[in-house]
Image 1 (tube, rainbow, N blue to C red):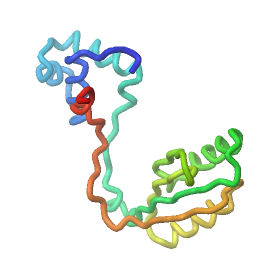
Image 2: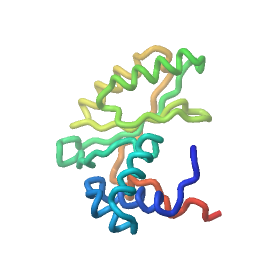
Image 3: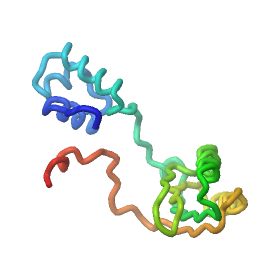
Length: 159
């Protein structure tokens, strides 16, 4: 963290995570301060990067994306330029929803969605042909047992 967040800042972040559409007046009421300083705090949290943005969480399956797959990607080279080139490649791929660089045997793990297996298989063919990709292992998601987009602010500092 770039600065110490006080109890009110943490309350603001908790409320915004729970409801990104909350009004400033309601937010101020919930955290126990008046609206003007609440708005100043929210703006400061945004400017300092604690809040990256506000967006709706959509149901991929209801929108026709029935297939979710994790792809473990191993590159043939871990040179910085090759890692960055792979990241650029992945950023341009709309089926890739998340990309994480890892330590260990796997270089990247990708979370992908697709409307069907044929579309995903076409993507895998494209992915395996990308420069420096040695191999790709995929795991089809059967169901999601937990999805929580929020940061667990109540856990911070428990240790």
